[in-house]
Length: 449
Ligand code: HEM
Image 1 (cartoon, rainbow, N blue to C red):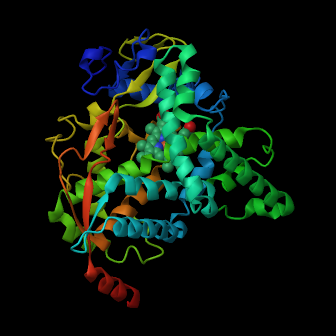
Image 2: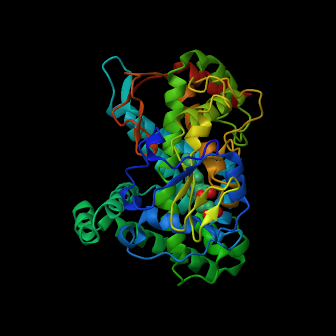
Image 3: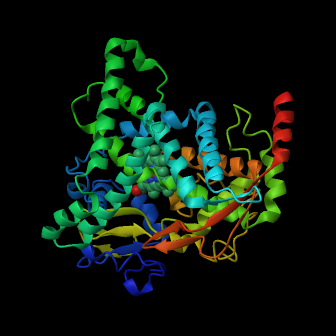
């Protein structure tokens, strides 16, 4: 087989051998197109995403409850709820800008230099306001504007990641001790689960008092989910779906946005053209972010070169599975699609290691594409429903920065680094910002015209 490779020695990133919890079942990494295409047409009861998720998240230890497997249902309610809210991007855009503007002003003031410019920690800043944007979309404005909940939510995500790692790497008897050391009395998780319960209750109360509300436009994924599941009030499903989606999605958009900013500000020669293209976008309530060809090309190239998840489409065969070329994966072994190899393949992308901002301009390729050469969002059956929101928000953040600030990095080395199979922004990277006075005039002209 041309690409399939189950030998740990051949992995260029550090994800594989460190998965010690699966050492007895060496992970298979599949990058061959035909193999993955076939997987696409398979029942999810054969190659299970759910079993992999359980091994990855270790819910028994991280969340304190086991997961029911419901993903066989087509049009899963949470997927529909995410799509419903994603479609409201034009209405949510000004609120997203409000959060960003408030937090960037604070970061600017807190890190101001004697010459009037400011040196902000880029990742910490974007992570915080980007996570609030995600919380607004998931739970609504009250939650996103509550600083205690936002703070506890971010701590809960970090703690869950650490407890999950501990559960995968330590002997069973040590896991509760490690979990206690990491999160103490688990106050952050309790706070978030209570918030989910009380917000859910509010949505059901609204539905009960005014049944006509089933048809009103939901203001959050939670409200859309309640409308999709009117009989689930006491079922636990809402808590499961919202908690899992919160943990897995909240910091992903800020990672993408930060890496896009890294790429833009390390290619300053493109700033005039990017600004010209983005003129008016922040003030136009109908602007939908899909008509920015240079920025789109930047984003596609940024996703391709950072490829922040080296592997995707993780599955566990429930019974042994044979790929079209004869390669058999035994039941219980993890299979994952090695997208980093595809994204950096010179036969697909000429001079693949080079960051070329214009590579995709005029090609029709977009950051939301799906397919074997663009597996970033998963395969078609379980593809990420959040992808339109994520790419819209990443572009919105980039436009906000480039229209409002001149900026450069204090140092351009190690802006992102590898941690296992993830390419993460470096928290130590600092961006030096100077306000663009000319932007005020531009915005006034745009509003007048
Ligand atoms: C950079 C950000 C993100 C990336 C890279 C990403 C990527 C993915 C991938 C690879 C999958 C799995 C596909 C598969 O296994 O075949 C997935 C599933 C999913 N994602 Fe995302 N995602 C992101 C952000 C989000 C956001 C912001 C939300 C919603 C708030 C979201 C909601 C979901 C849901 C609900 C699923 C499960 C889909 C299903 O079971 O059908 N994602 N995502």
